[in-house]
Length: 349
Image (cartoon, rainbow, N blue to C red; front, side, top):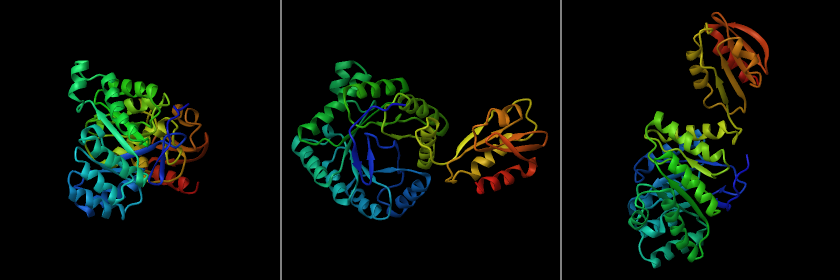
């Protein structure tokens, strides 16, 4: 699919925008002042494939703690700042790779200039984050309610402040918990400007509901070539956010690394415990680095035929299963050993 061409900016050792790969982000939910706990969580996120991490800096202690955290992690750190420009300046001193701050919310133009110059001096981009729950009162009065036009006007207003100070390394996010509004807002922004876009559905909800909302919102935009980096916001573990984000990219063919997992929904033809087998295979392959497609199918009808493009898979029979590679059957095994036998074949690939 053709992607909208946006500005290319650098966040630590990663590029966003332009022809750069789409990255997956998350945010720590630890107390940033607790360095050990935050570092531990980020390292777990790194293992899960997180490309960029964000941490809140609600006070000066947290902003200073970022330095110790950054020294112990391998992925770029974004400092999440609200209202106090001094926290942004301290985060820059701590060595963050980017700031998430809305220039219109940190006071006078002199304060904004100080932050912009500090970021410019260190080559640090700024993400402007607008969401439907924090729209300025003047725009609420102008539009009567939260709308896509109001959100875009808010984001561009913040960007204009930075552009007026000569700062151009800007990323924009326009999030809403309302999926249609979120989609409309990003499409409108994509038409109006060439800033890299950070996609997300804010306050998406718990793992089940939030995954659905995020997949629809983020996926719909990515399928239209809109978006340069994503964050799935879930009420739960940040690791789940990364897993969902990676799977969204995989489902659209935007990343080719890791396991692609295919399984049928089962039906009356199924004569093995396919649900249990599929869960076990998925669990055992969760950290597998091989770039292969694995299919778990319930019967011959949905086996080697429909899954012929899979690199390897199984097709269930009566308390047994066929293991196939590229649509060709290589062996028949009993149900109780099918997972182990499949794993052996995958290990040898």
